[in-house]
Image 1 (tube, helix red, strand yellow):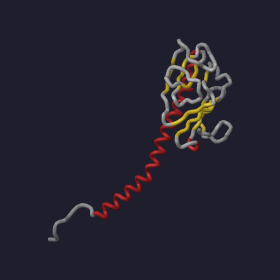
Image 2 (spheres, rainbow, N blue to C red):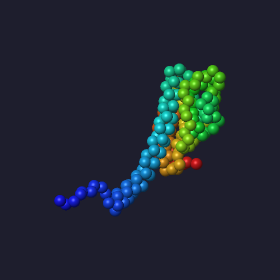
Image 3 (cartoon, rainbow, N blue to C red):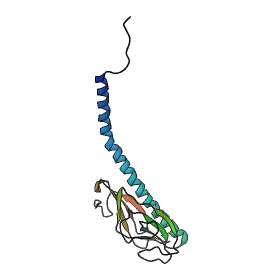
Image 4 (cartoon, rainbow, N blue to C red):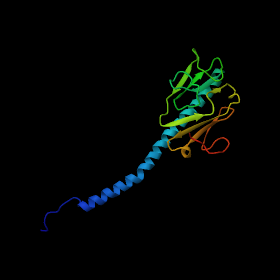
Length: 177
């Protein structure tokens, strides 16, 4: 007989396996962080584009004005170009400009704040009419802690159609503050 057979790993084998696993985890963690940040930014951009489509379609359906504005409380408009606190879509019965949600104006949807980043725009409100957006173009920039290199913009044409871009409407790089 050769003697008892032992199963298991020796200490040097175990240490080598742990070192390889630690190296792979250290290499993969930044990739997972980027993936999570990209997913969060994409979700916010998609929600904003969905809000634009909602406002455009409701304006056509109601043959009136439907507006978007930043809203920290989900009910009233803030006089700010900082949209990361959330925004609302509402029927703007009195067609005021800049749009302000007054009593009796129906709230169509309220969007939550984005705590992981900043959303800045060159407009305080966006108003859509049944036959286009009355000559107001806008750029809304989404930034997170990675800065301008990872920023995305939603550019809204005069007809109210949104597009997502890595650059401004003039072709220059996006800036995050």
